[in-house]
Image 1: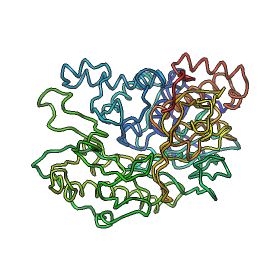
Image 2: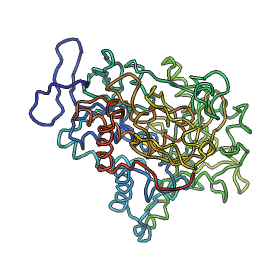
Image 3: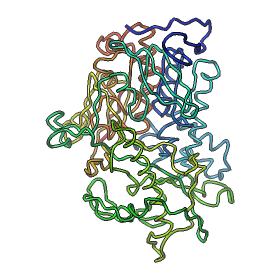
Image 4: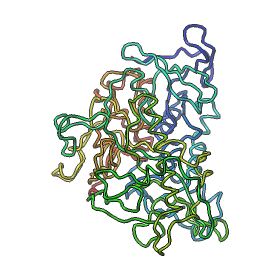
Length: 545
């Protein structure tokens, strides 16, 4: 059964009191603790609060929103996103972003009238926008629960330890990243929405990392041979820039520029510090550039197109640099010593800064000139002093050993003869994206293959043993391969929303998550709850991407 909190206050406020026994510092009580304030964490907190539960959500950085904000990644979505294929609350987030632009920014009349406004007109998404706008909208969505006292935000907190008794987590202690103050959170349910699945080792929850082998999963694209637990997808420090031809905004030469200027991976078609990349689907070499007619990286993740705004409002477009040229694959940052983790994080920052410096000073241009000194690093757009995103874009997390694990065979059109993904009777949501794996720390190349529109099975959200810890983002029961399509913005949001409602349902019904999944009446009742909340559980009849 779940761990019930004996609440002493009469209202719905999150309870705080000084603990006088073994736990030092402040102790905070809530029904649901969400550790990690990324997209999945925000969705989980919203769902649990909407279900009437008291919630605490912690976040390591200054910004909620994860990959959409602190990691500066415009949303990666499927092509039907404007019509269907996401939860109601995710659609509210998307429409809230558009509404924020219409209410706040000096749009042209033409842009204002566009029902599907794309502020940046980036080619990667139908909704490319500035991170700070998404941040503002997320706070608007959370505001009613924050103001009522049901939801407490704890920013700049990292989890440092956890208490577990048997199969139940009792408490998680977080530390303020500046003051060092520790706070212990006690809750009935703990939702791990950290970007790397940090609660899993702390709580003793069984998990896997890296690439499974064919012998383990039978997946056609799994590793042929022994599994590679330290072989994980590249991560990236994104940054924003604008451009002013004729001006000089060249940054100081990065410390590691010489290394990155000459670095060339064995599997890459040329030096990483060049315009030469690959087509992920075929691995054939391709030449990229900025301000070019084809393969234009400037437009790819452009988050502000100045033509959408009245004349003079903006002097330049703004684009996000999250390209092949600043993917970092020289080593993992999960389950390694802290010194090694910090080394790779710093090296990844140097890689991104070196890319900018190379573009400013040495990059070949279509007009025959060399370098774009007018490229300006926009520190304000990402909210940092160094101009890089607050947090690296993490593509692959620790993953729970789950009651059910989603395999390539469940979602690949090459493996599904009927042209439809595996039907999951315990569906708690849907998603769709190509199986998109970036180069890995084991120096393995892209895996970019087609995927059928899929469901999110409840079994993939339930650990094999732990009773009151649930995954709320990329740390669900998927493999290295299927992580490639379950890691994107709307899917992560759906995962978080589903576990937020699941934790609340379990508290109300005094059930364990496994019992909800494995008893037909409880599962049907829970799925009806999700449907009422606007969570789509199945797809219409559509073809693969």
